Image (cartoon, one colour):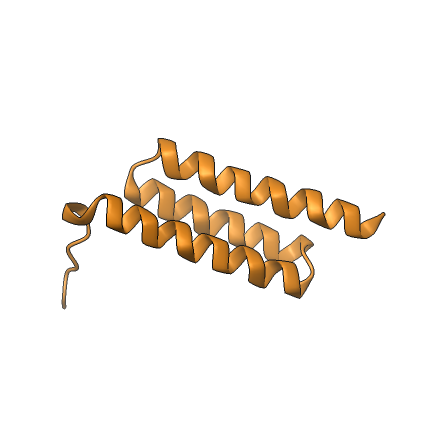
Length: 76
């Protein structure tokens, strides 16, 4: 039962990330990713958290590629 709940939580987190990717500007998307990861760390087993982290990383890369003009870095 716990494994099934963990799978549902992981799937839900991925769906939240995908929804945010489609509907948010870059900065909001990044902030939501951090929030989701922080909360997921508290409830997912390490293996699933690592899977989610990789998933988020890929979605962030996709977002960067789809909006390259908004990703100029400020060097201090």
